[in-house]
Length: 258
Image 1: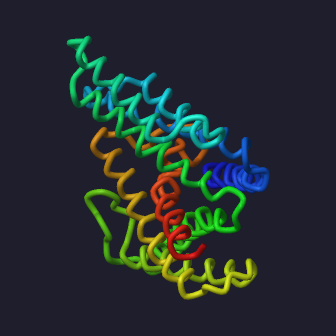
Image 2 (image 1 turned 180 degrees about the horizontal axis):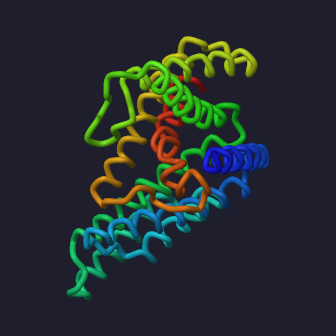
């Protein structure tokens, strides 16, 4: 009961803070994404230490800061950020015999997986579509949990996430669809069928993101990535689905809705 109370309180505070940050946008949003990205990178890199992989942590953090500068101030391009990070990592590999190729590869993977994916939210700043990232991801999680607990019988991926069911996954997609239709109505978006398709696609990708995070945790033998959100775990535990579905929503909006 105490754990449930903690989860609910954390969720309420988190939602209110999220709404405030998204409404303010711009520097508030980009700074928040950068902070979450750096914490997420720390969680990811720390987890890999359990299986004797040693990413170059500070290069990942510099990558996140570089993406912040690229997105918030447009002083440099994303391509230049990735070139510089990759080149420096390869030079480190050349000069330091203790560093392995796997260390370099996972460092770069962390930058792509977390801050690069994350910053697609910022690319939607100032548009009504930014809310879809959170509505679809959280809506999918919530409905999948509820439906899975009520009628879930058939396991979705028992070796990766034993508690997830096929019924829950379908419930998450349907719940996301309902939320998106309601949002489209109140946001006065006429392209309702395109919105529905986006909802289904992003809901599936959101659940894939959740499974990817679960798979990583299985590999590194941990229950949670972190503890920053009481009752919810770390950044990657709470934002795994958002990180994964933000890019697909952004590109869909750019190519089909704008």
